[in-house]
Image 1 (cartoon, rainbow, N blue to C red):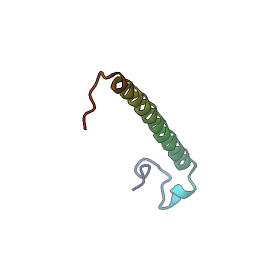
Image 2 (cartoon, rainbow, N blue to C red; image 1 turned 90 degrees about the vertical axis):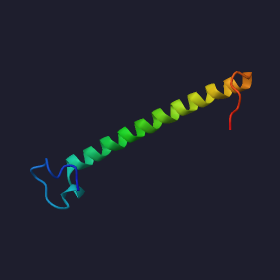
Image 3 (cartoon, one colour; image 1 turned 30 degrees about the horizontal axis):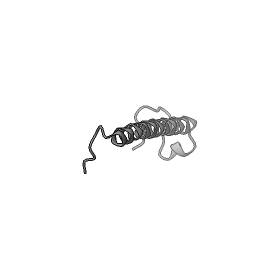
Image 4 (cartoon, helix red, strand yellow; image 1 turned 135 degrees about the vertical axis):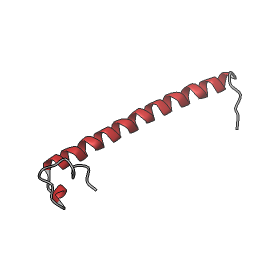
Length: 64
């Protein structure tokens, strides 16, 4: 089910393929997903670096 199906007055089956609002919605969601990926990647790398530094100085024993 399309998220705009209930709220769009111009909805018809298959109309999302040529709908400018749908295209804009998809692009915005894509940007949001990419921003989340970038955020998680940045903090994953940052936390990994801190953990490696602590292990290197012997502050935290390596637990496996």
